[in-house]
Length: 473
Image (cartoon, rainbow, N blue to C red; front, side, top):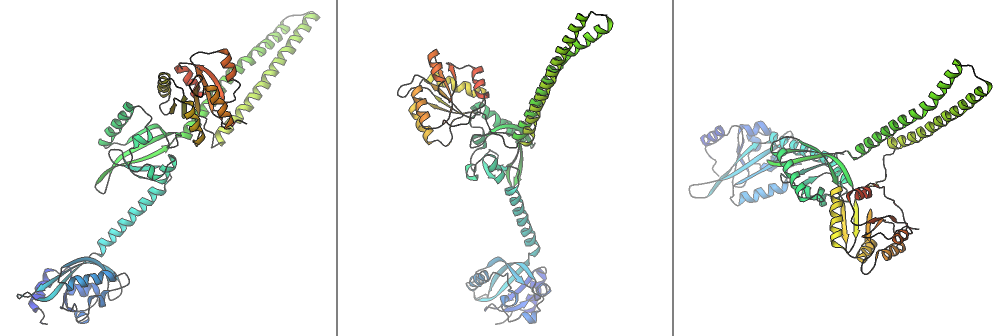
């Protein structure tokens, strides 16, 4: 074929001096290359002429399937744009962005192809580095010990890490696509949930860091004390909320135990100082009296007997102090060195009562004392027994009415005994019959007998009393 004129070649090369220019014959062999092609690849025009591009430039990382696809497109007369890895004469790989355009004659016949290759090695390197950095950040997010998540601006979970799932005793699929308020604060009254949303939104729209401590529940109903830190960020032009949590449950429990120990030590010091002071004051007084007066033998005998009694009291006080201090020392060691302690708190409450009004009142009072409680109501004791047979976890406490249709409270306790399950049961009735109280005490799982309706002090007492974790033998 006739090649394009030298003038045309020079004009084309002059207009695109920073790119690699290749002119292909109709059979896709190289007709001409510009100086930039030679400068980058190392192949001269003489070495290149008559060769196929892939024959010169293809290497181990060149996508051969992509090359075949490009050739098919070219043969069909289509313009082609793509990215590919080529190799220099010294086998150094480099990336190019290919633009191949067919050139037609005035009669509409194919004359040649013009290939314009832009060297994008540096930009591809930066792109790969960015991709690698993003992957490293993603791996750090997934495997850090800090519980973290990303939410959209409305509070829907977009991404959570393993530490977050571990803290809340759940899997990733339990959270993704769900609202964080509905997940972690669903037991709060509606007005409190709305207030939380407004508070968080106010901080996030102001571009400030939101930081606050919350009592939250895991998906298995365990209570946590966490510090929540939130900040609005932009990832890929999309605004998100970055959240990380600091679990303060053990720290706060430890601080509480230390404060309790300090209080007990102060109380102990106050009491023992008074107990010590009294016999010491008496002894000192008697000694002073003996020094200042002359006494008959009988008076001296009485004085020494009194001294013996007082020193005996003083010795008893010292022994009592040693015993108490030893007990406090053991408790302090447990507080410092026991990392895992049994959770005896009340989280799950069942109410078994056919009186809907009393049940509603009791439910509301319980929630007023502790909004995080999970409360289940049964109007039928038979339904409660069936639930106990299939439930994986028993309720922490069970409020049981006596007089119910079908299976009454006493029959419920008898059935419970036969299942060999232990539940902390509180019998409650609108009237307290001494015989009922006596009968209730015969059941090992009955903690107390209460009178309806329950008041706030009684409910606080129920929730504060340590649970018994046992089985009926």
